[in-house]
Amino acid sequence: MPATKERTSKYITAIRQLMAQHGHATNHELLEALRRHYPEVSATTVHRITARMHERGELQLAPSGHDGALRYDANLAPHDHFLCNQCGFIRDAQLGEIIRPAVEAAIGSDCSISGSLTVSGVCKNCYKNII
Image (tube, rainbow, N blue to C red):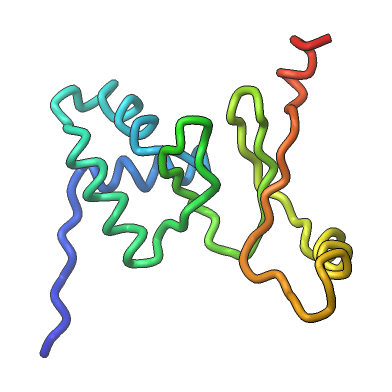
C-alpha cells in the first residue's frame, strides 16, 4: 500500500513555528497565539493537530501545568524538566547524570528510573516576588 501524502495546512505550519519558538505549550496557549493571525481557528482544530503531531513523533508530552492541561514539548531528545510551582514556567534540563544515580540509590538497587525527571521549585521571577 503506497504511503499517503500528509496534508499541511496554514495551522499546522503555524503550530510547528510556534513550538519551534517556544519549546513547550498547551493547546490553549497555541490557540491564543494562533488567533492573533487566524481568529477563526477553533480549539478542536488545534487539539487535532497537536494530537496528530504527537502520534507521529513530532511532539512529545511535557509535564502538565497547574491546571493539569496537556503540555507539548518540541524537544524530542531525551531530557528532563524544571517546573515552577508558582507560575508554571517550564525549562528543559539535563539532570540524568547528576540526579538519576542518587535517586536510584535512594529507592533501592532493585529499581531503576525510566523516562524523564521533573524537578519543581520556584523560578527566578517568582522568587523575586516572594521576597
